Length: 178
Image 1: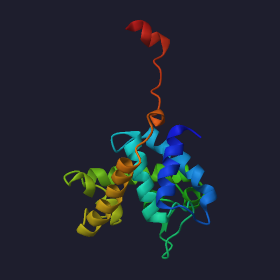
Image 2: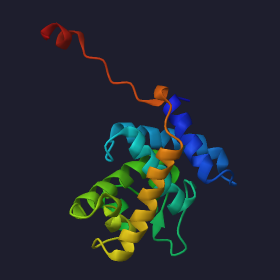
Image 3: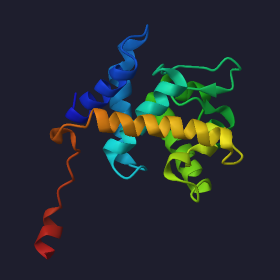
Image 4: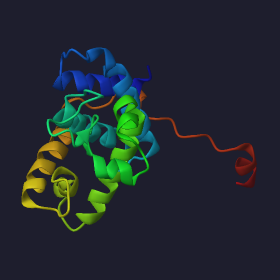
């Protein structure tokens, strides 16, 4: 396990020390790491990872195959079925694959951040939190709680310096040009 994934796992365990599905926590941490490095939509991979940890905890308590009682929202991030279908994914895919869930989730989070772009940072997931179609006050309050928890995790349990993702090295041809 990489240092970043180990740190993500420590954030998860600080929120949810145990669960019947805790045997999936390491693979969830690894999936969050991949999503945060691939698309650090909250400025840095570490900040993105901390907010994803918070979202996954509030939405599913880190249960990869979570389904809400109405059977309309699925996976770690409790994504609405219409969002999943709109991204060309299936319910089964996001329930069985945390990478697919997080890929779909990142798309929804980007959309929410764009729709709520004129709102304070803590409110930008209001569209996601309210399940659309607006940045409602109820969604803003849920967004503040989720984003605020992620930022608090980052403050209380900062990533170790070795957890910072390595920047890809420059190909030799590019180095020679400089």
